[in-house]
Amino acid sequence: MSAGQLNPLLTEDHSPFHQEKAEIKATGLAVSAYVQADDTRCPLSRSQRLLLHLHRQ
Image (cartoon, rainbow, N blue to C red; front, side):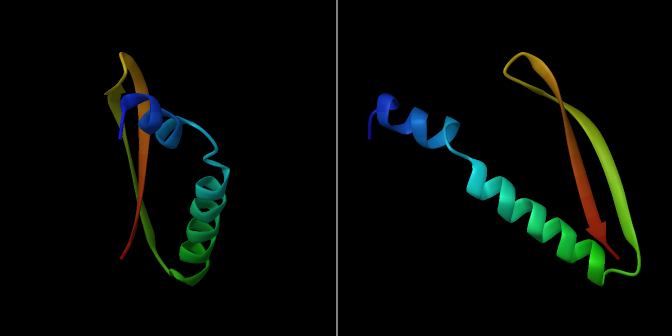
């Protein structure tokens, strides 16, 4: 697989994954009595991004 073939797979049409992520988050929050959240700044492609981790206790 070339870089030209791999790049679109990694950068285009992520809407199904975002929908799945939203459904997983909503379900997890609905069934958890206690949720711990941790946010961390992380460098990605020379810019700062925020990583949010939700953990079910």
